[in-house]
Figure 1 (cartoon, rainbow, N blue to C red):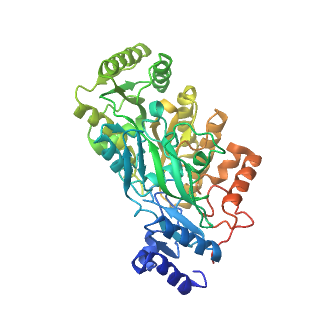
Figure 2: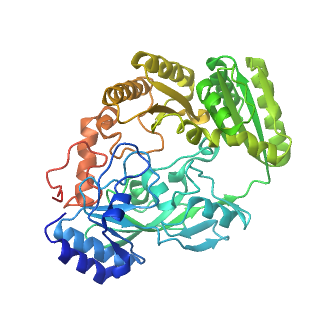
Figure 3: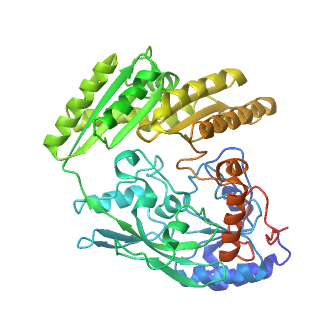
Length: 471
């Protein structure tokens, strides 16, 4: 705890109110972790602001006293991005949960960062509009967290990811200034693109207090199919040849044999367990075009050598098929006390090679890894079931993931496609961007946050010289 605990608490209460500052042992423990296993760090205080002005005043106080501030939403991130490793203030933004405006003329929506992603989906779809990004945690995660971590989702192949839908932001610098960037304009090249810089910055540069997002018309129809393959290479070829045929499905998901078996035991979907992989494919759009695309994908799959192709006849059947993919993490998490879900991305052409390499690495280090993910955009989620109490096994798990990331980079890929860097990937970032890239990022960090109070210990392995760490 910082030395001026009582004084700081009083000043925080004066800003946001007594009921909006929490510091009991139980509450500090509850905010000492996020969805990332193993990594923990308790804050000194949890503060719940309700206005941008309150955020500004909290940040001014924190900057003056050199107190770390960790912006947080629902805490669903998987890279240790909201863990208070240097204690300080967890700034919980969930009370910024209002949908400010759905602008049908400009096809935009303006929201607070605390709006739950699935709630936004329902609100705009009720108006015949569409917000495509759909991270796996969308029923819990907040829009602000999605933007901070650069979240992806299953519709990324056709529609892109969160960063492709952020038009404008209101944000607060750690020194307290309230600024705006972007807006409702679809074209705007006036100066540096600060909007894009803040998206994916993981709460290290500023605190976002309002977002303007792009919307699309809601597709009129949707169909789902599942393809089973005896060989991993066949699944990869189906992905490649579908896109080469100028068909871009809304969703193209992948589960390996190990994941299929676990999912079937969990969800009782009747999945075959004697195939190497399954592809879950969904297409949306104009009904006639959707039907043509599904038929053509089925033809491609059979020609490549798929053992079975099933097309859902009703939306309910489609939802049942997609349940296999959506239940993957929940199913795998039942196997061992600790589940480590990672993400590595490679070019689509390297998909089969990457999955084979993951299998080889799991065997080499004698660890249990199941793989699923977004086949259409090459984003895989190797998931290891382990027990963090077994130090020797955990060392092997760490070594296995280190090699997985090395292979991804060698194949022209990256260390994270949608989870962010946080703490979990910080040691691998220099291999992705180079030492010069790290130095440039650190200079940007210092320009925004000269006293280093925002989300310390994230993205960079070493703490900058100007970084304050609470004692």
